[in-house]
Image 1 (cartoon, helix red, strand yellow):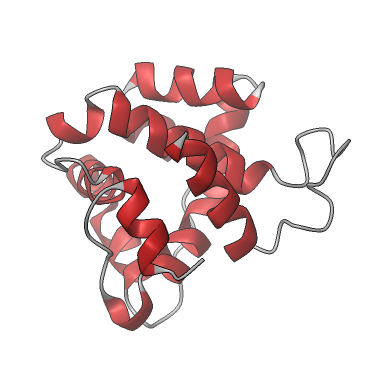
Image 2 (cartoon, rainbow, N blue to C red):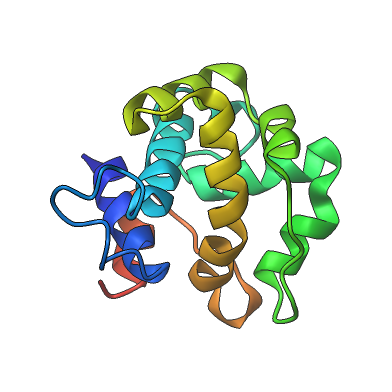
Length: 149
């Protein structure tokens, strides 16, 4: 599934390969997995479309964050400067409840823990997925292909 592929991609980008292997308990590779689950939920659950993201859940997610008052945070992740931190509470407020619930269920954690994990991992993931200060376009599969992984 594309969400799992993106989770693997994000796990690799975030350096989660070492402790996230077999028997990792979900904690080591959790960053990529939770973000892959979230983007899969947004792409498959209508959240990205509702936010204007089309079939690009990353673009839809960034638009949701922008509309939720986190525009400066989101811009800092795409830009070339320092990434601004975001809290789990801010993420939970910005995301559709159903998408967060679905991502949490797929990752095997509570929605609160999912929001915290997303808050920790999202700035780095978006930064690494937007080389040169531009978000990738297209579907999950297109994003993966654009990263040559």
